[in-house]
Length: 77
Image (cartoon, rainbow, N blue to C red):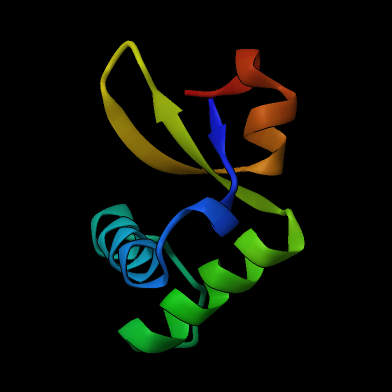
């Protein structure tokens, strides 16, 4: 289930994004980005509709997923 970011309190959303960024270990290429820059990048993706907050009833968990993951759920790892 996709949760609209407008329904998530700002501090909760920021904490969720920070947690996501810290656990993902995403490779940003040759450039290094600090936590705040990574958080801002994910927030921009959420606001632009390129990423979504998703709640899994099965796992009782919240995650951030890309638009491609939502559009093509069979291609997820």
